[in-house]
Image (cartoon, rainbow, N blue to C red; front, side, top):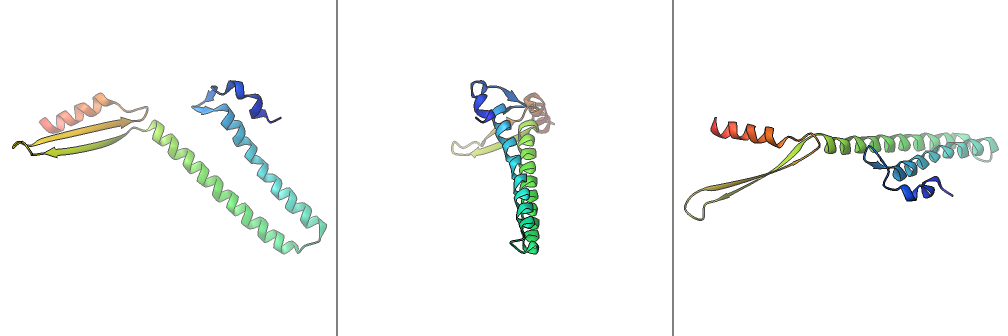
Length: 128
C-alpha cells in the first residue's frame, strides 16, 4: 500500500502551504533513477551495442536535467507570485456627462503587499 494512501485522513496537513500528500507523491518521482539501473543491466548482458546505450543514457540524463530545471523554475516563480507583492491596475476614463471622470481600480496580491503604502504614494503623486 502506498505511503500517501495511508495519509489520506490527514490531507489537511500542509508544509509551507503544500499538502503533505503532494510532497510524498513527488518523492515517488525519484524512482526515475531506476532507469539507469536498467540501462546498466542491458549493457552487462552484451546483447546490444553499448555505444547506443551510452547515447540513449546521455540523452535521457539531459532530458531529466532539463525537466528538473524547469520544475525548479516553476516552483521559484510560484513562490515569487505568493510572496512578492504585485499590483493589477485598471483605468477607465468617462467623458459622457460633459466632465472628465477617471476611475482607477487597483488589485494587490502577495503576502507582503501594503495597501496603505501604495495609497500614500498615489496621493502624494497626485497632490504633490
